[in-house]
Length: 121
Ligand code: DGP
Picture 1 (cartoon, protein in one colour):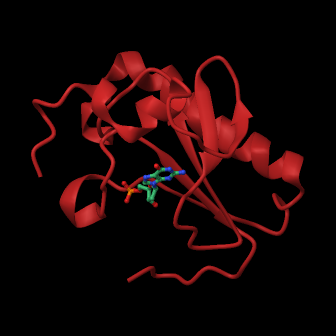
Picture 2 (tube, protein in one colour; picture 1 turned 120 degrees about the vertical axis):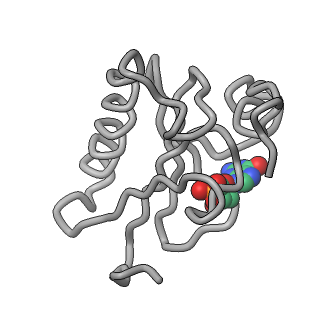
């Protein structure tokens, strides 16, 4: 998978940020947008993405530390707001091929609403 030469604006998630394609947006602040995954793996499956695009976690630098913090804080904020924070949930960042990453705009999966298996396999 070659994504290095591809402009970040080409990903489907950038189109969602620009409202060019529809998505069920459930959370938004200045730095972060969250919407339901098209192919949900749990009763709750929401993707949290930075509005400022970053292809993979490998591309993050120290200057992105605050942005990465905002992403995780947004997931916990959403979980509390939706009332499943105490019951529990999982956050996942897939990176590159072995991680199963398919969209090269960094995203945090938030999974909840059922007992999740560990290890994931
Ligand atoms: P990953 O495998 O970690 O790169 O996850 C990408 C996720 O994005 C995958 O679970 C399916 C989801 N997805 C892909 N295209 C779309 C889309 O157009 N809309 C929405 N809502 N989700 C999408």
